[in-house]
Structure formats: structure tokens, C-alpha cells
Length: 441
Image (cartoon, rainbow, N blue to C red):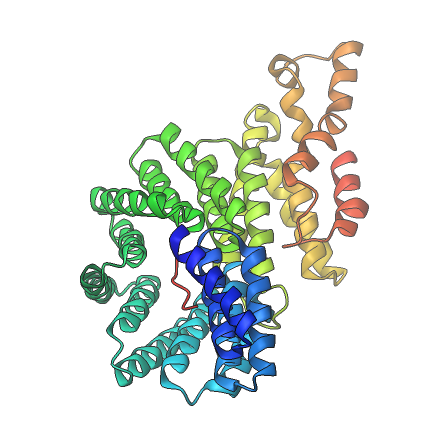
């Protein structure tokens, strides 16, 4: 790859000297793709913008559309969904009559639909991409679309179909000597194996893909491989290795600027923390994951991130409920108290016609309003006789202990998913105190 970068840089310099705008525009775009693969997203975007402007000056709609498609793919990778939609739509307007470009734009539109959970639309876009590649006699392009069709069919739980697509793509990648495509086939096929509880096959595929991505120094793809390995270790009873691999996945995703990979790895680590009984870590990670998933969809009206947000909300409430129950387990006298408070508080909130955000805030506050009891000694909570003055003062302080520190630390002050910061400040504190897809660039 370093040699290819040098060659494109030399071509760019020569084209600038000769005033060859079409050659310059395409060389800039192709260098942008390589920079993206080398984790230099800022330079990749700058090169794409230059390519688009050069193509526009040259009055080449096709080259301008090529640049726009690449810009759309880069926007998808970094989670800028609205930008991606804008660039891809404009690319279709300018160059949709060219079959090869149409195939790549359809591919990226499929990825956009897949991220947002519209699997039927995603499959339709991918199938259009395959047909356009076939019309262009482009087998390698078909292979890229096959990977994404496999991913969509995993999400649809059509595992046999997914196996077929991954296998077809891998065979083409081997014939073409495309190491990156081979790695993408392996890591995504690993997810299909994992979904069917074929853990050894999933681990073997993910580790083989990791070896390829390591050679290519593709950090976003390495993040995906580490995530899959961590998930296998988590579900096969190797918790320390699972945590290590999932944290590495998050770190690599952050470095690569891959919002989707960071969100998914954070969610998987949160589920691991929950299973380990590390509720504060689980809550922090769930909040982070939810914030990232919202970022993937933040500027698009009435579209949701494929059910992932709903899954996070369910898991979040499970964690909070379990935490409330663990608090009550220390005090047999008030067992079930938090659940009763939650039910009655929400019933009052509904009568007051409070919105869903405020109802959720109240429910969470009810589950955790006795959080400070975890710092009250067990022998005081369950003492059969009257309390001494000193013991009574300790019990009186239970609503203060940790009400701001631990709870808001674990909620990380950024719960955009169900309640706003202003609501937290005005409602939650008083309540507690008072009682890998493949982008086609």
C-alpha cells in the first residue's frame, strides 16, 4: 500500500503540471480511498473534495459523481448519515447512467439502509448493485456486494443464504488476490457462525481475518475482528479474554473513527459487564453505545437504527431493575419496595399526563432511590430492636450517600436516549435525594 500511495502522489503531481484535470480528479479520488484504508480519514475527505472540485471544473459529471460516491462512503464509515445520503443522492443524479458507478452507489445506499435497520431496502439495493456489476462484467464488484448481502441475511436470520454469499465472495477474492476482501468475508462469516452458536468456527474465522487486517493495518476492520473474538470468549465462559478483546475493539474503533464499530463493541462489552454483575460499568457502556447509535441516526427524521436502540433500552431497564433488587436484598423488610414505588410513581405520572421522557426519569429514580442503602451496614438495616442515635443518623443519610456521586457517575450525565440533561438536573437528583460492512468507494 505505501508504494501505491507514492505512485498516486506522483501521478497527481504530474497531472497538475500537465493540466490534465480528468487524470488529476481520478488520482485524487483513488488516493483518498487508500488514505481511508490507512486510517487517515481527514486527508481522505480533503482529497475527495479536491477530486470533486477538479472534476467540476473539468465539466466531467461522471468523475464528479465518482468523487461524491466516495465521499458518501467515507461519511457512512464515520457515522455522518445525513451527509452520506446527500452525497449518494447527488452521485446518482450526476452519474447514475454509468453501470459501474451505479453499482457502487447502490451498494453504499444498501449499507445506509442496513445501518438504519431497513433490511428489505438494503437487500434490494445490494441486488441492484449485483445486477449492475453483472451488466458491467465485473466479478470483483459482485463479490463486494455478495459480502453485504451475506451481512443482511445474517440480520434476517437467513443463515444458509448468508453462508452461500460469503462463500461465493471468498472464492472470487481468492482468485483476484484481494486480501482485504478475503478478510471481510471471514469476519462477517464469523458473525453468521456465532449466531448459530458455532463458536469454534466463528473464532477461527475472526482470528484469520484479524491476521489479514493486521498486515493491512486496517484498524476499523481489526476492531470488527476483535469484537467477534471477544463475543466468542464471552459466550464460551472466558470472561477475562472477552473483556480484553472487546476493549481492544473499542480502542481501535475510536482511533479509526468508526462510530458503528465503536457503538457495537461498546454494546457487546456492556452485555458482558451485565453478565458479570458489574452494573455500573454496564450502565456507562450502554449509555455510550446508545449515544453513538443515535449519532448514526441523529440527523435523519423518523428512522431508527435497526432495533438496536430498543434492545439497549430493554437491557438498560433490566440492569437498573436488577440493581434496585440487589439493593433491596440487603433489607428483607422493604423487599419489593422499589418495584412498588416505580409502579405507583409512573401511575401518578400518567395521571399528570407527563410525557414518556419524564415517565422514564421517574421510573429510573424509583428503582434507584434507595441506592444509598448499599452503604448502610447490614446489621443496622435488619436490626430487630430500636436503633441508637448514631445508627439512626447513618440510616437518615442513606438517601444522600452516593445519590449524586455514584449514580450520576454511572449514568455519565449524557442519557440522551430517554431523558435530557435538563430533566436529569431538575428531576432525577431530587427524586434520589428525597427518598462490518464493505463500503464501495
